[in-house]
Figure (cartoon, helix red, strand yellow):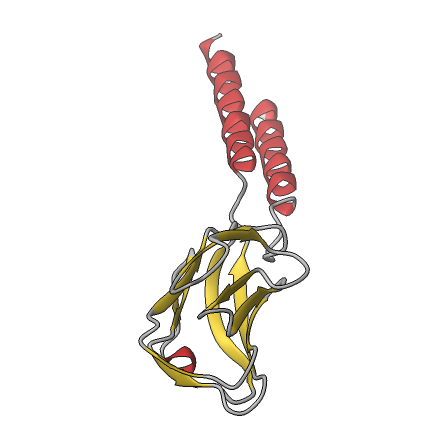
Length: 170
């Protein structure tokens, strides 16, 4: 019985350590893929500076640790540019909301969406008003356990089961 208690305690401690060192929950360093009308480049690593531009360079998309900032380079109205989709995040996207808006209208503010792995912005219609305008989306995400952490916990459990089996086989 003492071995069983020791084994359970060891497994819990090892599991706690593995979980506590899970991956970070921000977007910095993620390689994100982009799809949409005239969006370039098709993928970029989130870091300093603008990751993507689209609509003939009239719109920039800049990811931060927990934000997506959309900026127009000039006053612009648009129609028929479709959905812009960003995917490939290392984290699980749990919520996307508008943090601030300085003049954007249309689908981009009323019809954006997200799944656990994508963010979609509706650019079928809209207007950004006079001058350069900025729209900031707040992104909530959670770490996805690293495969090594899961494998470590599974390995610890298997070793424990083997030790128990051997103990009771005597």
